Image 1 (cartoon, rainbow, N blue to C red):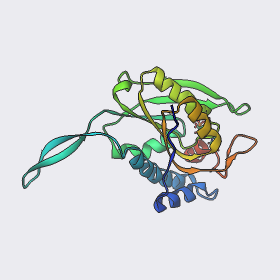
Image 2: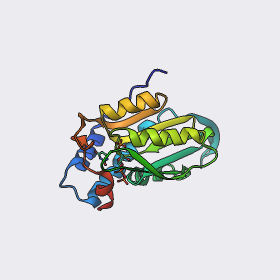
Image 3: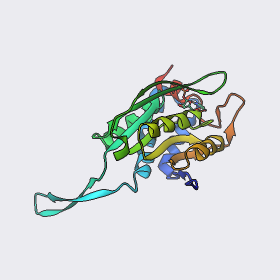
Image 4: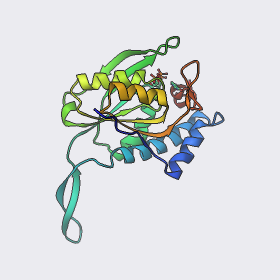
Length: 209
Ligand code: PRP
Ligand code: URA
């Protein structure tokens, strides 16, 4: 299967929020605020093509046509840092189901270590949004996508704030059918497998740890 090109959201407001969360001087409470705004903007792009049913709606004036999402929507944050994206997105889709995948990178090997999963039964019928601010080696995202597919997911879009060529290539090899929406494709990884220029450790910065 040919890889879909990642979508990079270049909207000026998205890029301003990204700049704020990159800055080392941005404290956690501001990091959260900017990440929440940026997550919402990425989610709007990621949901652009969602199918809707036409429904009828009665306004105070008359009857007219409206839209309703055709399929259930499932958001899957990769714990922990993915929760930062979820906080921004949920107010837009309060009816979404939230599933969880817990994966922690081994600090020495950078390999993903899955430690938790709670996935609903109806994944195959849903549009699934995999949430993680960082796509570095791609190990965590590949493992999460593998778990989602094993649980029946057929349509997965990954939303990540900062990606890099290594992570995108890993996803393209393992999951060419997973679309990716991001705010940046950075230069690459350093010797500790951190994204350069990146934003540091997303989970620590979001949670203030
Ligand atoms: C970070 C990040 C991704 C992963 C990306 O999580 O949120 O999940 O690393 O790296 P990768 O593409 O090389 O796998 P981390 O493992 O630090 O866990 P945390 O969210 O609990 O801090
Ligand atoms: N995880 C992060 O939080 N940041 C990186 O740059 C790489 C992995």
